[in-house]
Length: 195
Ligand SMILES: [Zn+2]
Ligand SMILES: [Zn+2]
Image 1 (cartoon, rainbow, N blue to C red):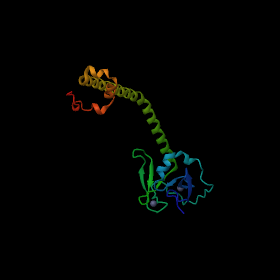
Image 2 (cartoon, rainbow, N blue to C red):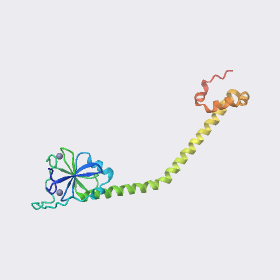
Image 3 (cartoon, rainbow, N blue to C red):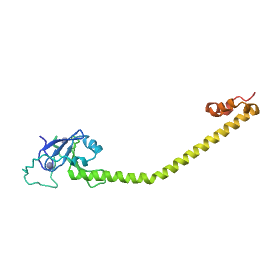
Image 4 (cartoon, rainbow, N blue to C red):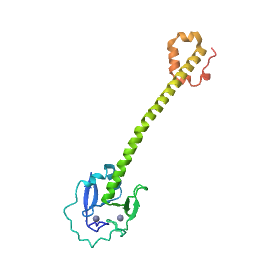
């Protein structure tokens, strides 16, 4: 039996999107075993609220010493260490230094969800703003590529004319091959024009 590190009530197995978690029936906090936090993040934390805890509110708590109490890992009883989510937020989570599980209060999960949604929205906003600029850049690049292509074509034409002169331009087939084949063109000096 696993015990809630926060309020010492029993944790029960809670399945979310096929991911097995442990949930406290009393304080609604969640225990994520190693790697599970990231998996749930993929689906969003908000969905965790949808299934209520079982009807089993037996407050046998020896009046909670909320706040700075030591919290023990539900799996291996090591002392949990608090850390700030995403470094800059003021959301505190707790990690087991031994088995790498993570404890999160339910309210904090919702705050993380809001943070993620807000982040996504601001990202979308930034993307929307950047789009016209990106299109402009793309257009410019295409334009430059077209110019480059045109220049190369002209260059090929000049070389061809220099090599074969009037005789060559009469033979459209050879000219086409020459102008459209990069291998022939790579090093014009290597082409023997002595004849
Ligand atoms: Zn609890
Ligand atoms: Zn542990």
